[in-house]
Image (cartoon, rainbow, N blue to C red):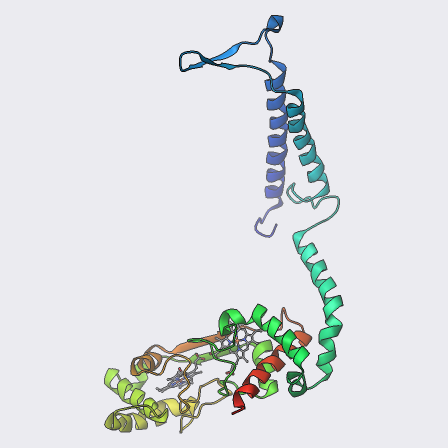
Length: 305
Ligand code: HEC
Ligand code: HEC
């Protein structure tokens, strides 16, 4: 009832519901008692088609009418047992939320011990356990794949979790913190601070150079000075990034928002924002542990030649 601020709305709805049911009963009654004419003779409704096709005004069969009455009785019994009349919660006290909670509780009782036994082990160790990885993968597909991709490969704006490139660090504790607490990566819009389009292009070419991409040497040289003053605070003087801020390493040619001249200029001009939502409110410690181990394991695999 959270959408309705006053309980009068509940009463309003209950009254309308009951009146509607009563009206159905009255309508049914009035239509079934005034039926056959005197003398048992059945008339027609007066409609005539195709010259001689008449519609008889026969009463409904009894069993059919009883079905209607049964639906009315059913609805009244239902409204006594289950919530449906405004704020009244029903004899059974059932609610969809309560059912969900119960199912969750039952699932936690069944799977909780299976998951929690991994909590006692280090993430590195869990990451090597095939059974734990399988459980981690299932959790990942449920909770993470919509943003990071079912293979954890990421897409534009959503980092790949299976490479060795990390915004916030790839140690088990950092990965767990990313999942549990969430992350907010903010690259401010710096077009004006850099000094207009030409300067932005210069800095972009410096970034291209850092990443080892084709670039204009003169522009990159000019952009280097600007990079020192405006960008180095977050990305570091050599552009290696800063995991405290989630500022990406710009030298590895792995891109979150695109590595073309145009994409980099857009990043500088408009800024970028990446939000990883916190998961600790709806995933318990055991599940987060398994997920962290799964992600950690993926990146370890990437390290193998
Ligand atoms: C709503 C989309 C969304 C969901 C759901 C989501 N993530 Fe993320 N995640 C992001 C974004 C966006 C970032 C990058 C944040 C940034 O740009 O600073 C991120 C970052 C991360 C990072 C840090 C990566 C790094 O390079 O340091 C990890 C680890 C991670 N996510 C794991 C997960 C796991 C595990 C799940 C499932 C429990 C998950 N994410 C669910 C969007 C999401
Ligand atoms: C206040 C800190 C901060 C400053 C200053 C800053 N950046 Fe960033 N930058 C970030 C963060 C954080 C991100 C990641 C945004 C995200 O998570 O989506 C980022 C992302 C980027 C990216 C995208 C990288 C990719 O993989 O797609 C580029 C390019 C970039 N910055 C270049 C620059 C340049 C050039 C400057 C100077 C003009 C600069 N940044 C100044 C924090 C900063």
